[in-house]
Image (tube, rainbow, N blue to C red; front, side, top):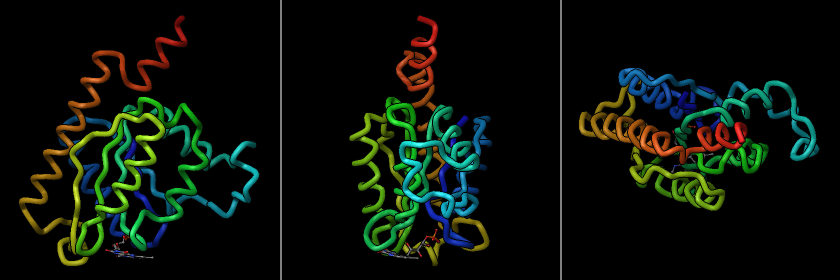
Length: 193
Ligand SMILES: Cc1cc2nc3c(=O)[nH]c(=O)nc-3n(C[C@H](O)[C@H](O)[C@H](O)COP(=O)(O)O)c2cc1C
């Protein structure tokens, strides 16, 4: 299962619209996927104790989706030159190393002129530090407010790029799985030893 993370909790977020487009592209390739929408998680239940202690059930179940995903696909908007604080807050509650180590991850950024280049590069730093497998093809959706209308990307070449990236990410995940290099395969091997 591919877990698509819509990287903000802003109501009526464009990231969620892009996540839905990406979900359709995965499904068109026969890949099972699910959107994890941060706006549906109640972060007010976190008060600082849950980094190490038990997490509220809904947050824990979201983290488990991450921990069981064959791959993560993060749709990330640019907020003040980086990715939204709520996404970092969520990531900081993930399990280490389970959530990150050897887990394939792909990114799409969205924003103004630079199309989310900065937040995606910041996320690559985090996931690289935590030894995830970063898919090198990234998508940047510039001037998102003019290219996204009624849940559709207007620019055909961008739609094709996104579709190519999704197809490439599926092959990337399958390639890692075929060599037992991805997080889930490694966990399976460890648990059978
Ligand atoms: C708090 C906030 C900060 C933003 N900062 C930037 C920014 O630094 N650079 C940029 O290009 N766009 C910025 N934007 C524009 C967003 O990237 C754009 O509105 C995008 O649609 C936001 O994603 P969302 O709709 O999923 O919330 C900002 C938007 C918000 C809400």
